[in-house]
Length: 345
Ligand SMILES: [Zn+2]
Ligand SMILES: [Zn+2]
Ligand SMILES: [Zn+2]
Image: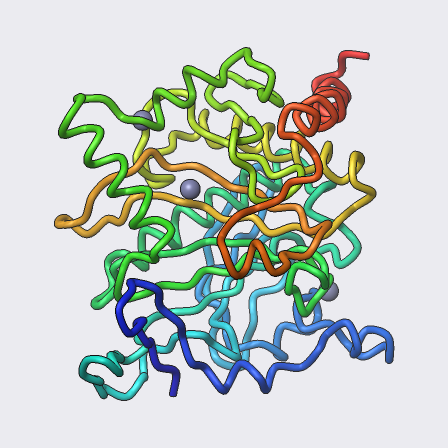
C-alpha cells in the first residue's frame, strides 16, 4: 500500500509506492508488437472506465463501462490507473515526527486523449482538445467532491524521456490529501501579495509579459510565454489573461480558445524541438474551502537536457537557451501552427 512521507524538517513529500514498479513497459511491448491497452478494441485490458466520451452526430454523450461490457467508439476514455500512486484503499497508518507519514489515500486516473495510437499531443486537433478539456473539467469536479481529496494534479508525460511508459497520448490525474509543495509555494506567494498589496502577483506577471520579449502567443483569453526564470530550456507557461482560480471556472468559449492555444504551442514545440519529450502540468486552486487560491495556469517542461549536480544539489538551474531566444523560436513556430489552423497563410 502506498504511503506519503514528509521530510524530517522540510515540507517536501515523497510517495512510497512499490506497486508502481510492477507496471509493464509499454514501449517494450510495442516493439514486440503486443497490444496497446489504450487502443480501441483493447478496452478489456484496463479497469472499467467511469467516464467515456462518445460522439453521436454532433452530440457528445458521457457514458460508463459496465462490468464485462465496455463502451465502444469513444473519443476520450477515463479509467483508474492499474498501477496507482495513491489508492482509496490505502491502509490507515500514520507515522510520528521525525518519521512522519500518512496513508497515500486518493485516486489515480488515466485519460486516453485520443483513440488514435499514432497521434501525438502536438497533432491532436482543436475539437479533440476541447473534448479532453471538457472531460477533465468533469472528472476534476467529481474528484474534488470525494472524501479526503485536498488537491487534484493533472499532468502529461509525453515521450519516454519524460517518464511515459506508453506512446499512446494520455493524461494522468492524481489526487492527494494535501496540496502539493509546488502549488502551496505559489499559493503562499499569491496570498501574501493579496494581503499586503491587494493584487494577484500572477495577474501582474501576465501584464508584464504581454507583448514583451518572452511572449510566445496570445489568443482571446490566454497568453503563452517563457518565464523569466525557466528551469528547463524552452519551458513555457500558459495563463488565463484574466484572473481565474481553477479550470472548473472555464466557460465553453474559453475551453475552445485554450484548445487552440494548446494545439498551437504544443505543435510549435514539436516543430521547434523535433518532437522532443515533454511534461505538462496544470496548477490550480484547491476546491477545499480552507485553502489559499491561485491564478490557475499550465506549465510545460520540454525534456531536452538532464538536471545535473547544480540543479539537483543546489536548486540552481543553468539554462543554455535564454528564455528570450526560446520565446522567439517557439513564437514563430506556434504562430505558423495557428495560422495553418485558422486558414491564414
Ligand atoms: Zn494505443
Ligand atoms: Zn490573477
Ligand atoms: Zn505554477
